[in-house]
Amino acid sequence: MAMRWWPVLVAAAMMATAAEGFISAKTWSAVRRANDRGGPFVGSSCPTPTRWIPSSTPQASPLPLPSPPTSTSKLNAGLTTQLLLSLFRVKGIVHWGIAGNADEGLQIGDVTIPEHWAHLSLWNWQRYGDGPENELPLEAAGDYTRDLGFLNFSDYTAAGPSPNELNSIWFQPEEIFPVSGKPEQRQHAFWVPVSSRYFSLAEKLEGMELPACVNATTCLPRAPRVTRVRRGCSANVFLDNAAYRQFLRAKFGCTPVEMESAAVALVAHQHAVPFLTIRSLSDLAGGGSSLGNEAGEFLAIAAQNAVDVMLNFVPLLADGGAAHDAVAADM
Image (cartoon, rainbow, N blue to C red; front, side):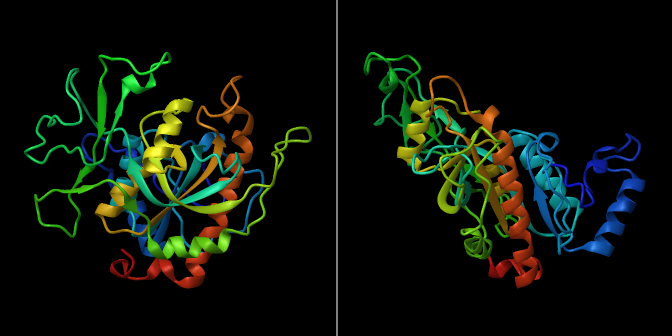
């Protein structure tokens, strides 16, 4: 969402000329002035800003807050996060938006704050005829692993298990090169933890009151809640399939399922920058009515709830001085 009550500082960075390279002299001058006058920053980002203009204007944030849109997908979110960290004096990141819900104990409108994030669309796709006992290509070299498990397509044949030439996909961790690591020595990351301090501060939001009605005739069964959860999952997939939703919940314990947060997590983790993601549940990821996905009907209230929780979280950082703390003490 374009936060109209805060300066948006990042979009101009993409307007470089060929002669000036990555960023124009004029834009770089503006970035330096912003850093000198306003930093250090807490960076705020969300996927699709033009659809998420809040209905009310809150008080100005007590912290400087550059707020770039990431657009959808893991690639876009990762690039935007890297730009944010490269251009500005960022001491923490708060990412927010909507998500599908894989937890039947929660409802649309609830706002989730996961403790860990994973990217679930990096696979080793196994050839037909091989099974769990067969080594994956390049597994011996450490490029791939069978440690995280697999999805076998034959288990999801409508008439019952039967051979399927699509066989199995094996979930893989990301290769990362943290700033604190040895040069050119890769590490692997699957579950990326959020900032322990940010996650602890988020507990103060769990009693927050949120609206239950989209309009005079459309209301949720109960008032939405803010809840901290164990795990959120990202993939370059809009999930509207009950079987895969159930698989992800059973296999990985996912609550929110969406397309960006793991990318933000991986970039922040490699730079040792504290981060937190806030995701409001807009639909049941294929687990609801057979009439269709619920996101179109409940997008407005889910988006508003995500905005409201984010705006209530950021002042907690200022109150506790978290934006200025040493990163090493957090990670």
